[in-house]
Length: 285
Image (cartoon, rainbow, N blue to C red; front, side):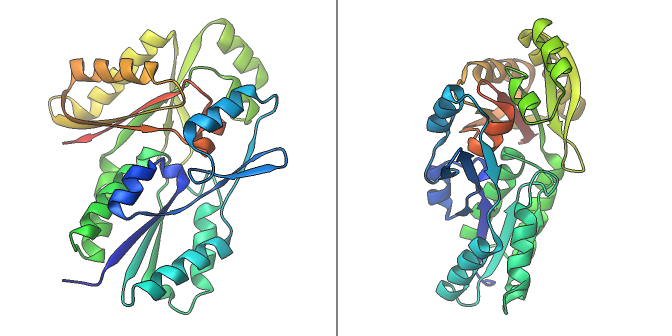
């Protein structure tokens, strides 16, 4: 049996407190700023409370990454409490945030940097949350660092996921789309289908008129990768789960679904996509 492996991630993996506690996953939270008020994502503000504040707020909150000092404090504590352990730290796409760079800088300032592996997920939400969960399960079973890293890489290649926003307002406020596009899209009920591409950037794979047509289009896109194979799905939503549940039932009608899991989109991801957003994550069973 190899050295103990400890899994660290950040709050944008959108892992519930229950999952983190059950699997021993260590969280480094990003911060959410409403004016002068600062909250730690998934620590001092949970998903539902955040979306209530968001819908009541006249201005969009801002988000910020953990500092290198935040990472150093956690890494040093974990290595002190677990002599001989190895840390695998998996984080939000470096194209979205400096979180990964903060972790890398923290490691470079430590004497025991060879005991820490840091991964840029090039993904967001359960796109890397699911590999983190798998890694934590393997760590609890005593798997080696190498086996866990191999499984994270395999899962990252296997996962496909699509986000469906309820409103274009938050993408526009966050600078992801222009004002004219947002206004035009809202008038015509245009629903962009969003992915995180291979470079870790948000991209729109299609724009469909109406929620139902958009959901049907997501099924077509998923069939390109998973037609005729058993799958597991994970559903995520921002404050309202209705669209996610509808998407889930549609997936069950189109695929051989073996397992379904659920999560809520947290404050940092939610700042950029807004309430009512739903997402589906699919892997081979």
